[in-house]
Length: 444
Image 1: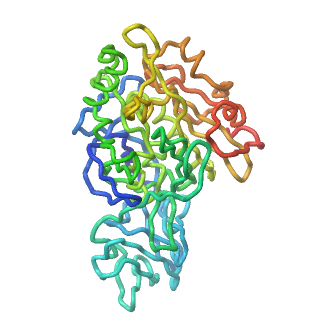
Image 2: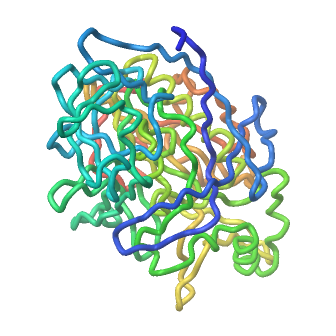
């Protein structure tokens, strides 16, 4: 690999075709799903058609790293598939990596690898590998090239109730269950089972997150034992969602959909696939409790710009931040009588709405080292007027003029009208978050 070689990153949008529900444990298939591309000039986003693939292209430089007397594995381009879960030895932590996404193991030191099924070279679920040098590791007295240490199939991930509540829901840990006493968590989700809506998803970002593993296939979204046995994937299909909303609006819904212009509801990730470095982690983002109905033109528009801009800025400035990404409210459209009507993808037996189409998406970022923070907010409805947005969707004082690292078109309603706020100001309205402090000022 040449130093400073520019690599093409493929960052996928949100969509899928089927679901599998297992109580508490998600076994993940390898179906390739549709992707999307963000255009340079918003909101002219290429349409996403079922079974058709589009990609968003972003460029960064990968700088190889190596030290004498160590094993060095570059995550982007250096991992064979299906890869195991890489772990710190005897710890409930993923194996760490450098700021440019390189796994480094000193000679004579170890890391552990986990395959819930078994390894191709060894009929076991967990191995301890000792670095010899370069890409050579010793396992139980036998030397292997790192590329040989792969699973027979991709590791399944777990959506596990933690037994505690959050503001407006229950806490669910998402990660990998190595043993009954060793659960390796990558994100924490606050999910409301009654309304079937996620309040927020908590995960962290650091400099290496912009060097995430590429080429990892998107898989089918999973219910993970939630949603009371519903076929949630079917509810998200364009045919079904249009039928549902048309019924809610009394036959006035068809005009609000146009798949050729990305005007339909997608499975909008909260913890984005590209927010996680290892391929195993990226696959674990495909849970319906990590998604909400998001208008695709917004998903591929300003919200994609927020996600990309944050990762790039965190990498360039060597920040380490905690993210709380979630949704708030229920958006509306006028029914046949002109009455603003809330939108849902499903209803219970009493006609109470379930899986709401949110008013806004948000991402709170807190830097623990400085206690600085900021909130990015995007309006999830391309059919609103500016007056409606200012009246009902701008819920805190806009400080986005102070932000220089997001390449967005903030006032473009079709691409998702967007703004930024101070954390304390935002939390005056949004009550579902944990107690967060940004006493150090704005994270800009």
